[in-house]
Structure formats: C-alpha cells, structure tokens
Image (cartoon, rainbow, N blue to C red; front, side):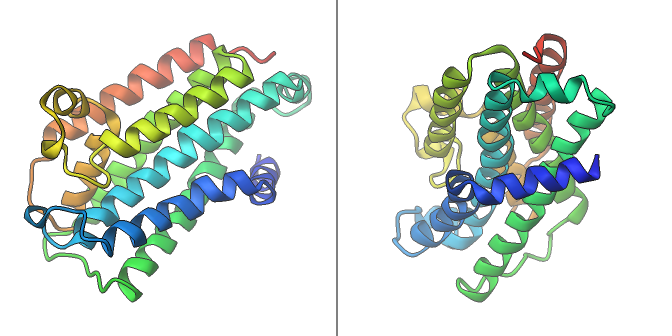
Length: 239
C-alpha cells in the first residue's frame, strides 16, 4: 500500500496539470488576492482571510480534481481492473490513494503557511486551535475526496474531467475563498452557505484565530462527507 501511495505521488509530480492545480493555483490565489486590495476591509487583513481560503482550495484541488480525474482515467484505461485482480486488496488500493492525498495536503499546507508567514507577514491569532484545524482538514478531505471518487466511479473519464474542473471553478468563486460569502448576491449567498467549500473556509478561519461559529459549518462538512463517501463506496465501478 505504501509503495502504491509513493507511486501515486510520483505520478502526480510528473503531470504538469496536477502540479498546477494542486500546488501553483492555491499559492497564486493567496499571493495575488492578498496584494491587490480586492478583499473587503471588513474581512480584516487580506492574508488572514485568504490563507484559510487558499488552504480550502488546496483540499478541493487535491481531493476533487486531482484524485477524481486521475482515478477516472485509471478506470477508463483499465488500470484499476488490473490492480483489482492483483494480490493487493482493494481496501489497500483505496488506502494508498488516501495516503497520497494526505501526503500531498501536508506539502500544500507547509507551502501556504511558509508563503503567508515569510512573504505576507501572517501569524496565527491567540485563539488559534490545532484540533479544530485538524478536524477541518480531515472532514474537508473526506468530503472532497468522496466527491472526487463518486464522479470517478460513476461517470466517463471525460465527464469527470469537465465536471471536476467546473466544480473547482465554482467553489473558487462562491466558496468564500477569495470573497466573503455575505458579499455575494442574495441567491448565491444562500447557496454558498450550504456548500462544503464555504463551510471548510469558515472552520479554517476560526481554527487560525478568527472569531466565528464552527458548529454549523462542521455539520455541513460532515453531512457532505457522508453524502459523498457513502454513495462513492456503493456505486464505484472498477471498469
């Protein structure tokens, strides 16, 4: 399982589009929007608002886009069928993918914290909470990895590619990542508040020291995780 997880990471590093969406785009979003004055003053310092959003975007990129699209094409090319027939148990195959997702997220978190601290002068607030941060990352990973595997296991590879990228763009625009949800038009604000992207961004902001409720966002994240992971397991097709 660890050998397969290492192979997953090597394959991700070799694909330029994967590196772009998982590493470059979250870092670029943080740097660009933190220095352009787009974030409303009411949201506080731009970096304090944008760092949790960039972390949420990294989780979305890894679980939904990278995992979903790569798995869809592996299924399309017959790779999963052959791995399923090997001595490797299927639970170990899924476990290897999750280990690779978590390892990639650790790299993303370290890079984003480094950029925020050294370039943008960020520091955690006195109310920052490591347990809340870990809970947010784990629930966010469950929700978006579940969505990625749900798409990959039920749709054609081309459809997964289009839908995963479309959802990524949609979450970026209305997920409270670069603009507060309450600055969206009223119909979009109501939708955004029940999406996992906004919930993940909100919990991460509280985890890094901002004031705000976390009960309802955690419920939303948990509900999306259950709603995505359960059907993904039941409906996943290996070929």
